Image (cartoon, rainbow, N blue to C red; front, side, top):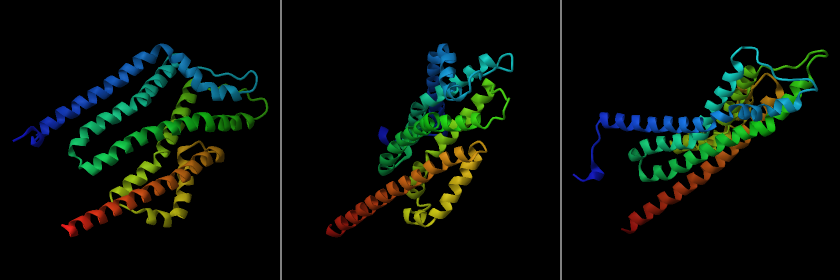
Length: 255
């Protein structure tokens, strides 16, 4: 039996999985160790959108004894995971690739690259577009005489929640492509459900963002646009698949 047809046991797959997981964890640790010295600078950069909208005299505070250390430390860990995500996805891809057909491999590779790009795009959109608008709104509606002094741990939890919400929401085109690829739905069916998608986008925006209409809308509108992008790409893929199928049928008839 040739090496290309070698049969792997469950134990072999478990060893391969452990190897891939260790490589992914090692990548996160390497990135984390390279950034830990700059943890305070990283936190300062992430807090800029809030500080820029604070009134004169406003500042951030640390209410817990150790929060001035743990907040930047926690942020650096999360950032290390975000940065190492393409390599982590590559390890996932390397583990599942041997079990995929050739046409599946052609699609999964671009999907993993696209998912990383969209996730980073969602985080960037939250930081550069959503944060300045939302924080400016929050600080402008503060009652008279209230001194704005946000706790650094509370702020970190808030921004990480929004980073994750927008990063995941921007994965909508990937989800739609996968649903159409697996035959769970079709682009035409999704177009017919567009009114329900609009309502669902605003409901998800309400659940994943703070209780204000601005951040909810800023999440729902990109989700709707990304839904249309996903349907468009799925339609192109469907058309290409149909053309390939007709071409194969024609070749079989000729033979």
